[in-house]
Amino acid sequence: MTIDPDISRDEVRRQLRDIDTEHRDALPQFEDGLKRAFTDDTIPSADKAAFFLGGLSRRKAVTVGGGATLLTALLAACGDDGESGSSSAGSGGLGKPSRSQDATIARTAASLENLAVTVYQTAIDGASKLGISAAVAGAAKLFQAHHRAHAAAFNAAAKEAGGKEYTEANPVALAEFKATIDALKNETDVLKFAYDLEVIAAQTYQVVTPSLSTAVLRKSTMAVGGVEARHAAFIAGVLGQPAVPGNFQATDKAAGPTFFVK
Amino acid sequence: MAGPTRRAFLQHAGALAGVAVAAGAFVPVAAATPGGPRWSSSRPGDVAAVARTAAELELVAVAAYDRAITTGALRTPELQAVARRFGASHRAHADAFIRLGGLVSSEVAPDRDALAGAVEQLAAARSEADVLAIALGLENAAVALYVNGLAVVEDRAAIDAMASILPIESAHATVIGRALDLAADDPRFLPAFER
Image (tube, rainbow over all chains, first blue to last red; front, side, top):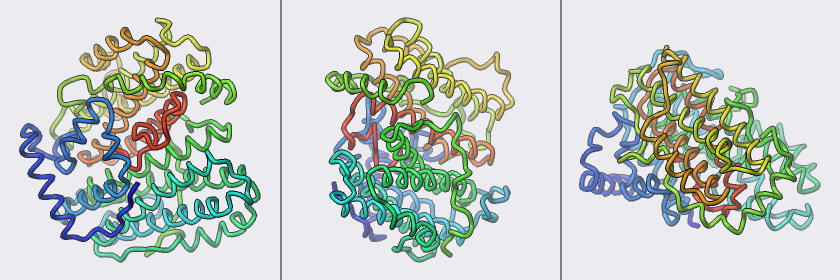
């Protein structure tokens, strides 16, 4: 599994050109692009076909860096022309969608992802001391890789929105959870805390999504949010807790404005 | 998952491990039509059309889970409980989109082509693992529907609905992936990004 958080704009543009060429060659019927779902011009036709024919290409999908690239490409493709025009008020302490707010959301998301990377690293480093099984350690490494890719993607989004990347763990969350992290004593403690973090992330992305200024960013954010929900469901299953939180995801655990990184 | 105990469910999931290889043999039901599932409207602002498309797909999932139980394709009580639970969840999603679109419930039916695909695939299923693989394809297709739907909708209520439902479909897929004992890095199970 490879992770490539350092994606240059030139590389993004090159990939976009390649994708565009491939797409126009293979899927002319989808030329109206984002006007219709499942006609996303930025997704290579091979991946799209593979999905519809029975699942994503394993080679493509396990390449985490490819996912980060996708988000970057989507954002780059959007530019300033993709304003939603929504007049809806924001939620979770957020205001009317704007590019600067996009950057704040993306930086905050990156900070939460970095926190998750840190926590999973704690579990990985302390596996022996904490009595963590090989299976759980393996999941921790996979989920950490996902979060690292998510952080890279959100940082790319932050930069595209005119902000700076955020490479540290969310400081408010880290302070709030420091005592919990220090008190982790066994595998169950680690799993419960990891579950909480995944739920916080999943719910936070749900809350911020309507406050993003472009449809492409909303899509990309929930492409990450769904994965956090999968992580939470997986961990819940290991803990023997309900893996599916009702018919609709709640938002009571979402990170509030005090967690935002300007 | 409210029905089965973890122990019972995981015991069964373990029993299925040997046949999990069959999971890749089935095409996602909702993608059975050429070009895959798609919104019925090209107008992003047409909330009623978006809601109808989503409701029709959710109702396919409802029908598929119901059929898996009533035909005996799923025989294990724990898996039947999961199917009932997930089916009810999809029913709630369909109802939410019916309300969102201001649609008349009695006039919204499962997408005909996708339902035909589901029926055909369920009829061809030879094991409970096959059925679970079909369900996994359905759940992942629903995730894809909403991920890509979010790229076109502008209506706040539609965005809220998709953003609150998508994670549930993701969780469903994860539960099924565990039951099939899929490898952790299988993109149908635990992908790095939803697509």
